[in-house]
Amino acid sequence: MKSPILFFIYFICSLMFAQQTAFKFDFGGKRIESGFIPVTSTSKFDKKTGYGFMDISGLKSVDNGGNALTGDFITSDKPFYFSVVLPEGNYDIQLNLGDTKGISETTVRVENRRLMMNEVKTKEGEIVEKTITVHIKDSIIRNQKGQNIGIVKLKPRERKYLHWDNLLTIEFNDNAPKVCSVIIQPNKTAKTIYLTGDSTVVDAQYEPWASWGQMLPYFFIPNEVVIANYAESGETLKAFEDRHRIDKIWTQIKPGDYLFIQFGHNDQKYGNSEKSGYRKRLKDWILKAKELEATPVLVTSMNRRVFDENNKIINTLDDFPDAMREIAKEEKVDLIDLNALSKTLFEAMGPEAAKKAFVYYPANSYPNQPTALADDTHFNTYGAYELAKCVVKSIVEQNLPLKKYISKNYKNFNPNKPDDDEKFHWPESVFMESLKPDGN
Image (cartoon, rainbow, N blue to C red; front, side):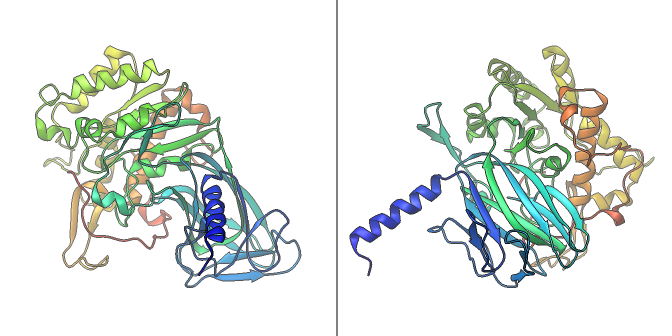
């Protein structure tokens, strides 16, 4: 049994680690670069140490000799997850990927499958240095002095998510992920794009569900811009207020940041845009964002997969898209008309092919899925990726200020000519669930 003094010292050290915001991790074997924390294939996550792998089964430490930092790496033949205790905030994460004696192929996602890097390949002997910028959040609402003044009312299922958990979790995936090092530094200057919305925007944790919000980071220049996704399944504008999600954002958003607002799918259950209070709340949010010197951007809700006899999309969102268009004009704010872009996209696909963008899967495609999935509202990863491209396309073509932060990952996209779903690259995560998200 540890003495009280030793226990106290251990507790203080753990507490100091929990408040630490910069780390250097050397992944691999016994040879460690000076000033780095060693991470091996047996470094299982422990809250006391504050870092480690979620699951160490299948992990391999490989040491090719040579440079202590880049001559060795961690790899696995299945996705693996590395977590670090971090206070909320924005962070730059520098990754060294590759193999001095072989090739590698790595896809990197963070938290709830938020896409950061896709299919990064290295030649034999090549090591590449890549940077991603990540927003970490917790559910505590603090004032400017850092005092706790409230809490976000999380749903029970959110407590299992890989966000809201006071951890940064990085998912390394693909055919041959090989990670040499991870360096974490706070980023105090990046513009933050706060996303608000429902299940069509949320960072969905489980395959096969996905949204455009979790694909968006891939298309922005790291270090300059970071995506902070606060959307949640089943939410309306009112519910977002009632659960204090928007209060959390109001205490964090700073001059120069952005607030993207996309609601409608669930709001329509409570009447039209006037009766449900939709219009009034939208205007209130716009006013508040402007008062805080942030830029509000309205995003109309995308269509559902509902076609008429002429293979044209039927509007199932009542007057909500038009209400948002009208308010954008009245309040002189930018509008991304995802409703119109998705109509073009889905009609170009056609009724049958459009199923490939939605959650349509035969029975037993995923664990505990005895019946077929046929969902005309929620998207799979391919559909979410295409919608994210629509969002970026609108930013570029309207020449919005955010245009200069769009990365080279975005190529000119034409929703009249959707990408080939067979060529879409998405190695699946280990988290899978057939349960439909909240909302419709």
